[in-house]
Each structure stands twice: as structure tokens, then as C-alpha cells.
Length: 174
Image (cartoon, rainbow, N blue to C red):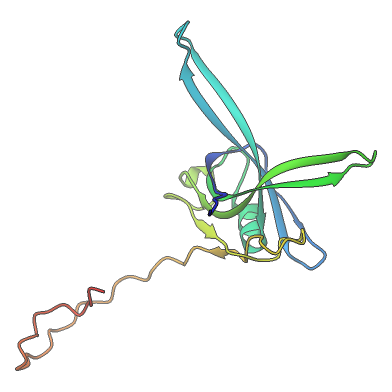
């Protein structure tokens, strides 16, 4: 049976990004994203709030973009997958951490929040070497395509032909 490991977050950065580079030159960026859930208590009617902190890791080009544009407090959309790592601390104790390996990111908010405005920018990825020796890790990140150039000026209509297909669109529907 197939399985799915997908995480979608919309939250705010709790601190500025930390970008570092692996020995082979790949960028790695770590951030903490806060998501907050609000509800009204059934018994008292008081508003309740619960904040959850998520460790998110970006790789390669997306790590560089995150390091440049993300700032503390900035809203961001992230898609990725959960990954639990194990390591041994300086006292010889085994530790575990669960992180979100980001595969897509979109900056949210307007220009006043820094970075790209009007919905922000987007970066995404596919499989690549994440520096942790796992072959199924995210791939090189691609930034969103640049804005499109303005449409060319309208041209004069083409001369009519005898086929009867002159008024049909050039677009093929499949």
C-alpha cells in the first residue's frame, strides 16, 4: 500500500534564518515557524490559544532564498515532509529531532513585511543531496520564474484563406 509523508504549514518565523554550507558547498537553512490555533473554551467561553513550533530545513537554492528573504515575524507557506534524525550529544546520549524538509515555499504578506510583495515569491524543489547522506532528500530548489514581459502590441489581422478555418483560435484544446 502507498504511503504519504506531506506537511503543509502557514505560519510566522520565530527568528531570523540560519544559513550554513556543507563541506561540498550546498546551502542549508534552518528556521522555526510558529502556527497558532485559536478556539473558544466550551465550559467558560474564554478564547484559548495554542502555539506550536516547527523546525523547518531548506536546502540548496531554496535555502539561499529563505536566508535572503525570510525575517523574524514574516508569514510564510511551506510544503515538505517530516524527517526524524538521531544523533549522539557530547555526553554520549542519543537524541532525536523531527524536522520538516521543505520542498516548496511561498513568501506571504506585502512589501511592508519585507522581501517580495503582493503574495510573495515561491521556491520549490525535487530530489537532491541534503548533506545528511539520504538519497531521498529534496532536490535543487528552483526559484519562481521571473515576471512575464508585457504582452506585445496587437497585430493586423491575417488575410482570409479559402479553407473556412480563419476564425478559429490558434490554441489546441488538448
